[in-house]
Every structure is written in structure tokens, then in C-alpha cells.
Amino acid sequence: MGRHAADRSGVGEERNAQAFDRPAFERLVEPHRAALRAYALRLAEGDEAVADSIVEETLHRAAQEPEQFRRPSAVRPWLVLTARNVVRDASAGPSRSPRLPSTRQPATTIVAALQHLPAVHRELVVELFYEGVSLEEAAAARSVPVETIRFRLYFAMRALHAVLADRR
Image 1 (tube, rainbow, N blue to C red):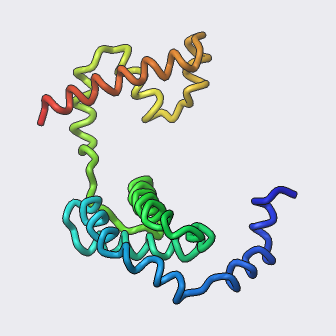
Image 2 (image 1 turned 90 degrees about the vertical axis):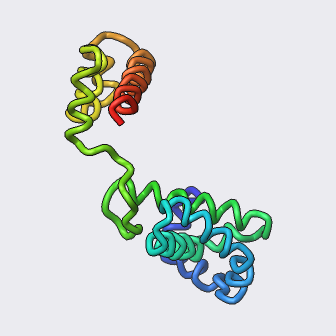
């Protein structure tokens, strides 16, 4: 049985719970709280309530993985990475993560912008993002390698980004 499988067993969870020392954790994290809060405030585009939620979720996740804090020099980078993941997870869909301000364009704006793309770009974006076709399926349908589809998608997204920038 691999290392990760053993960690998922009840014994591994019990060991982690016993090994967690809340006061030691607080001493390691405390010097980084202000910097973490400032970073979360930037991620939340100035919304203090959302920033507080990001910090809270970040510290909650950090407390779940105390083994990350064996080296004090790793604490701040791990907290920053975790905060960024909290924001990414919140943007990906509903979860326990905080609700963040939306940076996405309204759907009507996207649809209008798609009309300004070349047909080949528009078809690829619609197929992959709206119809849920995988890269592999799109490549097989076109009899091209997956890398070719990635390459075409990259340029389609750049073109879409340019159209959206022009519309602002």
C-alpha cells in the first residue's frame, strides 16, 4: 500500500490529530498573519469580508496539514499558495470556500464577442467550453494530434481576449 493510501486510513488521521499542537501552530503562523491578510485583501479586490473569509479558510486548511510546517521558512510560502488555492477553488464552483467577486464577463458579452471571432476559432471555443467536448475528442474528430488542438485553442482564446478588451 502506498504512502498516500496509508494516510487516508483512520490510523493516519488519528496520528495527525494527535501530532497537531495548536499553540505551536499559532506561534508559527502569527508572524505571517498580517502579510496573509494583506495578500487576501488583494485577492479579494479590497473586499474586507471576503479577505477575512480567505484568511479563515487558509488557516483552516493549514491546520489540517500540520506536517507542512516542519520548517519555519516554509510557512509563509505555503500560506500564500493555500490562499491562492482557496480563491481558485471558490472561483471553480460552490464549496466551503468564500464567495469572491466575479471577474468573469457576463454571458451575453461573451456570446457577442464570439460572433466577432473567425469561424474556426468560434467553433473550437464553443465545442470545448460550451458543449463539453474533451481535447482528445476534438482531436480525434479532426484527425489531428491533441497538441494541435491545444495550439489552436490558445490562439482562439487570445483572439477572444482581444475582442473582449476592445469591447471594454
